Length: 195
Image 1 (cartoon, rainbow, N blue to C red):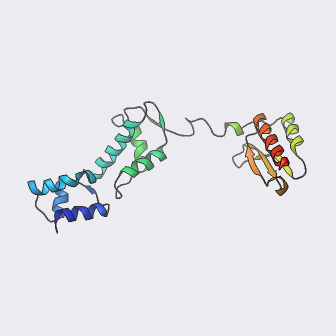
Image 2 (cartoon, rainbow, N blue to C red):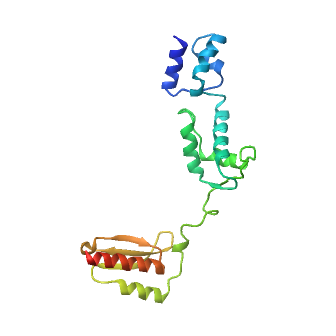
């Protein structure tokens, strides 16, 4: 088989990771020489040469080098982005990203993996103590066809729930239990009453 056809077939099938150019040439049943090396050189941008771990490490390092210094990165997001740039037959997982974040040879920008401990908690607005005054404000919003109440989530947080029947647009929304949410709920109720 012609070497050019062989290379095109490998590219089409996504088989683009090889230990070396020589290994690719030999797998085509050809001898490694100046002529075959020139042919491979025409297509080499579509191939990844080196061991699988070298290819993964290069892709991870490229990703890390593009990130701002001292920033938090989403490890899951990093895996998805890096895997898009890797050949189909080579994939990375979150484990290798965490490992490379600890390695200063890779992590020259002092990146950190984003976790619930080092990001602003999404639940902070919901982890509040409900006062009697707040409950009274909620009770004033209730009327026929409009339910407003405080519910406890599975994780134990509080949420403010607005439900209306069909006459008021059949709403079912939740909000953080605070004064701003009461204002938003009043506005929504007034808009639905005008319709």
